[in-house]
Length: 214
Image 1 (cartoon, rainbow, N blue to C red):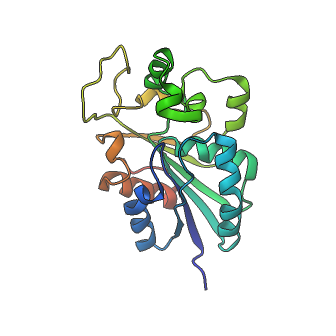
Image 2: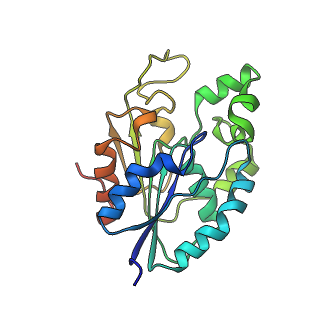
Image 3: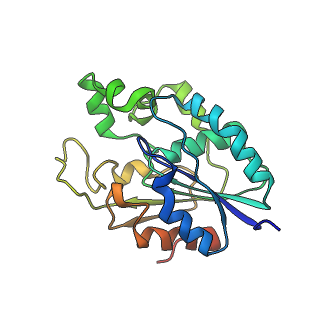
C-alpha cells in the first residue's frame, strides 16, 4: 500500500533534486512518500512545466494527497505548475526563500547584461518587474501556502543591492505573496535553507498543522 501522504520537492535555480535530499529524508521519516525531480538548467518556465507535468501527475495519482515543498525558484515553479497542471488532491504548499516578488540581484545582472549568461531564460521570472504574461503564468494563490524566509547571509551584501533583511539572495519582503496562510523568518542563509534543521522542523509543522510553530 502506498503512503497516504506524498510530497513533491522542487529545487532552486542552478541546483538539482539532490539538493532537496535532507528535506526529503525528514519527510520520509515522518511518513511522506517523496519525489524530488531535477528540471534542468538553462530552460524557461514553460519547458520546466512540460518536463514536470507527466511525472508529477503520475506521482500525485498514486497517493491520497500531494503536498509541495520548494526552495528558491522552485517556489515559482510550483506556482506555475499548480496554475497549469493542478493536482486534484493538492494539499499544502511550503516555499523556502521564494523570490515571489523577484530579486534585486537579478535586476543587477540584467543591468550588467549578464542575466542571460548567469541565470538563463529563467531570469525573466526572477526580476522584480515581470511582464504581465510572466506574472499570469504564476497564477494566484487559492491553496494553503506557508512561506519561510531567511534573514542571514553568508557574505555581506550592500543594502543598495539587496534591501535588508535578506538571506544573501532574496530579501524577506520579496518572499511575501498575497493569499499565503502563514509566513515566518528564520536565521538561515539562502544556500543552506534546505539543509537547516530549523527549516525542516517548520516545514513538517506547516504540512501537519497549516501554520508554523512560534
